Image 1 (tube, helix red, strand yellow):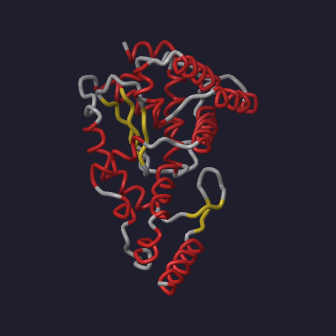
Image 2 (cartoon, rainbow, N blue to C red):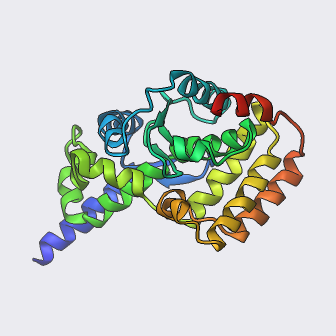
Length: 267
C-alpha cells in the first residue's frame, strides 16, 4: 500500500510539473491538464445536447440570433484567445447566459429582453467570452481530475487519454458545464477582461457597471427568474460593482451604447 501511495504521489508530481503553462488571458502560470484541442472537442460534443436541454435554439427569429452573433464576433476578434467561438440564442424565458470550453456560448432570449442596449449585451457576451478564453470551464474540469488523483496518476501516463471522460460523459458533463458556479476570482477576471474587450470593440464599458448595479438590485429584490437562471452561476455583488468602477476609471468611459438598434432587434 505504501509503495502504491508513493507511486501515485510521484506520478501526480510529474504530471503537475509537465502541465505547467501560461494562461492566455491572465498571463499567469498555472497547471493545465486539458489541452486546447480537448477543450474544443468537449465543447463541441456537449454544445448541442446542452442547448436542447435548455429549450433548444430560438429559430423563430433568425435575425435576432444573427444580431447576437454579430456583437459576439466583434468581441471575440479582440479577445486574448482565438477560439472557434459560436453564439446562439436559446428559446428559454429564464434570463441566463453560459459558456462552454472552446468558446461555445449560449444566450437565453429571456435575458435579451431584460437588457436595454447593445453595450449591455456586449457586457454579458464579453464576460462569457472571458470564461472560455481564460479556461474557467477547463480549470473546473481540471480540479475534478486532480481530485481523482488515483485515476489521474495512472491515466495521464497515456498520451491519448481523454480527460473529459475522467469526470463524466455525455449530457451529464454538459449539464455540469452550463450550471457551474464560478468562484469569485473567475467572476472578477470575466468582468475585468470582458470590459477590456468591450472597450477594444468600441463599446462603452460603463454599461458593464450599470448592468451589474441592476443585477445587484434584482438580487436584493429576489427576482425569481434571475435567481433560477443567471444568478445561480453568476452571483452579483456590490464588490463586483466596485471593481468594475475601478476598471472603468482605468479604461475611461465612452463608446457605443446602441440603444436604438437594440430596441429594434429585440422588439
